[in-house]
Length: 143
Image (tube, rainbow, N blue to C red; front, side, top):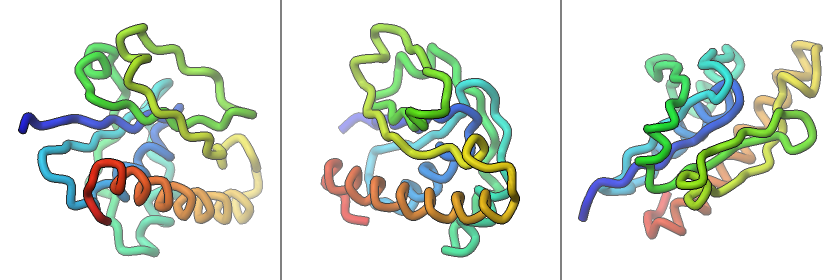
């Protein structure tokens, strides 16, 4: 079977990075998981710290800003957006056919208070974990 690529895309890479971290735990043969930011590729320290709590080290994951050619070649695109707060991400028609959309809050746009923001990052880690488990079942690969 050919290798497949699944991209997790969010506005600034923080939520997609968490998704890639969780996906790295899937026993999915022949699937490469990648993450990227749509608008930029910064990594939020809260993403790294929240995942450290569950023994997933994201510090070696490199921030990546997406290239439309990469998306056109992807087998699946998981678009992670806060429907209420994020700017809409527009993809090419060929990419649009491969999209799965997850409505996950953007902690950066929900609170300016560091303590509240930290709690929101912990919540989205749990939310993304559940969605990755469901994705793993869809891919016939148990978590």
